Amino acid sequence: MPVDVVWFKKDLRTRDHAPLLSASLSGNPVICLFILEPERLELDDIDPIHVQWELDCATDLSIALKALGADLHFAVGDAVSVMEDFDKRYGIGRLLSHEETGNSWSFQRDKRVLSWCRNKGIEWAEYPHNGVVRRLGTRDEWKRRRDKRMREPLSDAPFFSEGIQFGGEIPQLEDLGFYPRKLTMRPVPGEDAAIERLESFLSHRGREYRRGISSPTLSVKHGSGLSPYFSSGCLSMRRAVQETTSRIRWIRENRSMIQGPDDWIKSLSSFRRRLAWRCHFIQKMEMEPNLDLVAQNPVIDRNLRRELDDDRFERWKDGNTGWPFLDACMRQLNSTGWINFRMRAMIMSAASYNLWMPWRETGAYLAKQFLDYEPGIHWSQVGMQSGTTGINTIRAYSMTKQGKDQDPSGEYIRKWVPELSMVPTKFIHEPWKMPIQLQNEISCVIGRTYPSPILDELESRKEGVSRSYAARGGEEARSISKKVLQLHGSRRRPKKRRGKNVKGVQQKLF
Ligand SMILES: Cc1cc2nc3c(=O)[nH]c(=O)nc-3n(C[C@H](O)[C@H](O)[C@H](O)COP(=O)(O)OP(=O)(O)OC[C@H]3O[C@@H](n4cnc5c(N)ncnc54)[C@H](O)[C@@H]3O)c2cc1C
Image 1: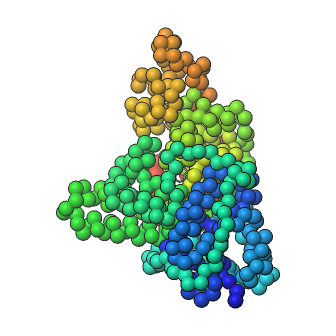
Image 2 (image 1 turned 180 degrees about the vertical axis):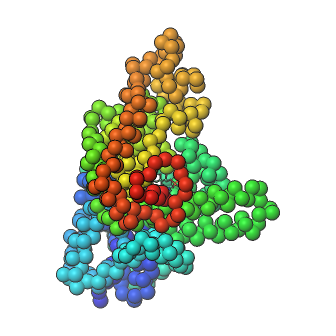
């Protein structure tokens, strides 16, 4: 009897999992499959930390599946060879999976798998994932279809009567010659941990979401911290949206018993909007699968003529630019694999406007640092923050101002840049202004124990911004920007914002 193969990719959960449910109802024997693809580890945007995280989530999944009567088989190799081997051994009737909207590599891999299935006469049933709509004709339709999908009922984890038993070891990255770096504060992997994190956010942590989200320290507590779970699919987007909506309803209904209900509702509504952003950005990659390789507006990108300077790149990567707040953020990211939205934007803005480095190299470095790397969001954001879409306001952050706003006492800087631990608050954001005598007294000599600023921050930012505006001018660049807006722009009415738009192209920010 032919088997149903459920191929787990970025959907490492048992609940609200349409392919798994469908296989359980088919009456055919079922093989659950997870493939570790070594070729992925050679890509410049994939890091061993990503694969280790997925392996750990898959290990948790294998335990959950066992309790449901199914076994997860771990295979190592390229997907087509693994499928070929399974077909020879068991005879595949159907392949079931979620649609994946990943990077260009996974897009090409899926094309190879599809062509293999067609040659073999095997049906590949792909189910929609998140709020991404495959073969969407026009963006005008997207929001309605996404919202409708989010309202559909959640499905429970199914039971299996006829699973195929697998022994076998869980593969170790070290055996393949890859050594993931150790992350501090790495979240607990797996579906139960993801649901617990969502619950703790909705029940109390998220109350202060709006107040805390921009601060690199408060966002650790009051942000949801769900992104790595979404990226590995331990949590379905539909569940997150529905539970958030229920929680908002509950607060509304019990407002008389709750302190500050309106602020709480605002916080959770703002969180729910970000869940929609997630789908919105991944949809861009779905519609333009090479966004990780080619800028949305290649003419602007070409006009910018940014170049990779090795010394600047190394200092930016290591958090040794001499700009204390930026260095602290980079070091937090390198150590934990996570940092909040505003700081990601600032890090990218520093790379692009102050240091004038090309988005592809800096974006790939950041992708490797983020445990939650999600190509659709990442490369869209990299494009926005580097000024290469042509449809977004050029937003170049002042690192000193961000530091003063988000870390007025300098505690955060002192934590992540211990060379500055003795610097008084008055100088913590601009330590190069300390009198030399003070520098000697506290053993923090700028240029020796901590670098001098790599460039003048204000001057380099001003120059970067003006070169970026110049690169957007010209008919060719503008006409592409219009197309970008048509293909990817949000259909929400734009809010009035300060900042310049491309002439003739109405700017729409999501
Ligand atoms: C240059 C740059 C690169 C980024 N790369 C990634 C990435 O690889 N993976 C990733 O998940 N996010 C990325 N983001 C978006 C954002 O920074 C993270 O989603 C967020 O910091 C994750 O933390 P959280 O789960 O606590 O978020 P919360 O604020 O609690 O938000 C909940 C969820 O909403 C989604 N979300 C939040 N903000 C955004 C946003 N601006 N755009 C799209 N979706 C959003 C995420 O799925 C997030 O988990 C990037 C942002 C920038 C500026």
